[in-house]
Length: 461
Image (cartoon, rainbow, N blue to C red):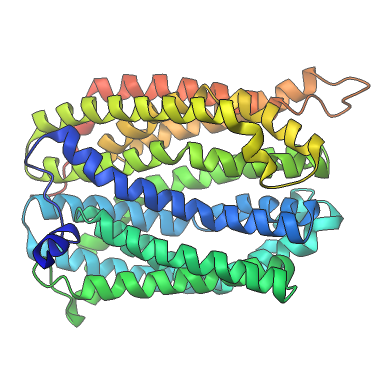
């Protein structure tokens, strides 16, 4: 039994065995983990919505785009190290793997200090730039300031979790996240319902829970001596590994920044529709977060799978896994989308007792439903390209779908649907533009994957 448990929490070599089975086995713990991760924000929204009110719910949601924008540096490091770790692990290059992990830890410390230094000066100006209503701007600012002052836990959990997944260990990351999620939900209730701390309480609960998960992840890495070496000299960044981290991670960081900026621009339009629609948007995005989990989970799994097999020089196996993994992901998303359409109203009612808010949220959710299958294709095939070392192509696709398509379309539809009843346009334009950008993004990603240029981007010697 002990041997079985040890094997469960050990790194997994994905260069052998049935590709589809390996991908699914790796994805399931990660999918559960991503759902748990989503519970962080969802628990915040449910508790403030129920115990504080709809405006507090809107405040937590309005803070989201700014939070995501200022986390782009960590996204870049996480993606870069995940690709490098998976390729060096697949190529059995122990020293390169060790130096990559040490370099990543040091860069994360530097980036964390930078974010903590900058955010106090930019948070409130960004909120005002977004035309955040005066009724919620104070709550938004307090929520963001607490999260950014405690950003070290969030940064290290996500980046160390990326290292574990690059090694094929998605189970350990899951367990630590589940522990943190339970702590977060319990503290949410205590801080808000019992102590009356409001929006600040849910932010504080999230910071504490993420710090615990980061410590557990670091302790796990320190015990993995059979895979890599955790030495002081490896914490001093070498030019090669630092450059590779930046080169591979920067496009993903830019992609996240572009997405976050587009969300900020669209958030300004969203805010023009009033507090009720802002709250509805928050509810839709929370449910949307769960609907997106298969896409993100399979996408990350495909990055690890592709990285290990590219490092082992097994390109035929990469292509086979891409086909099987994408097919399974699409079927999974179809089932989840059907469940959301059938039970959507009940999901919306968890967040609020306001009937018109439930109906508005559900009507917007139905618009997005068909887009989830398209996102599976985009995430899986982008994951394959990233794992091979091509992080630039997904970046350009993201730029086209968000900057060129989504943002102009949202504002254009709003402009042409203005009326006496809707002076700022039809609020549905927010979600119609998103759906169209998802579908076109899937088509472009498929074309780029079939072109095959990603096969020439391997970093492992």
